[in-house]
Image 1 (cartoon, rainbow, N blue to C red):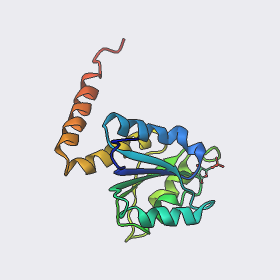
Image 2 (spheres, helix red, strand yellow; image 1 turned 90 degrees about the horizontal axis):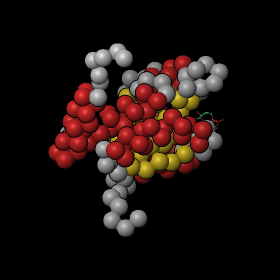
Image 3 (spheres, helix red, strand yellow; image 1 turned 180 degrees about the horizontal axis):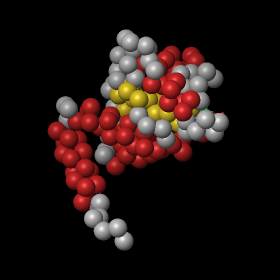
Image 4 (tube, rainbow, N blue to C red; image 1 turned 90 degrees about the vertical axis):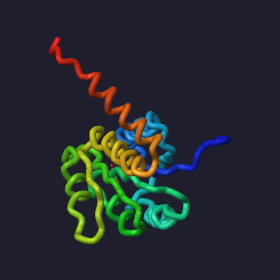
Length: 163
Ligand code: RP5
């Protein structure tokens, strides 16, 4: 697309079946006008694609990676092992264990290779996007303004009434 800004956030996921969860991260970034890209990159089925993605992320100008995976969810940790960029992990809700396997696979990183692990499912995807935006907003005042406006609108949208 002409005039499109290069992506700052890379959203990767282990399977197309993760898109139903990870699209919430993409939609949040879209709303905050954060340029991003979305790719299927599997730690197990496409390991070389994962290595290429992680190793080229810095030189391609990405600043944050959001990685969603389910089950034996090695994608966030393996990606983090091959790039110095902050990696935010989203545990996708699996059928067999309702995402507890995904969560534990992502959160228990050994000291030395961090993954910022979010909640299971949609909440994690939304919050990963907000966290990525908050990181970028540290050096982007226009984005900081948009993020604050988003938070104000969210607060104003919470009715005190129960009906
Ligand atoms: C993981 O396996 C993916 O992240 C996905 O959550 C899970 C199942 O993948 P599919 O069998 O639906 O492609 O690698």
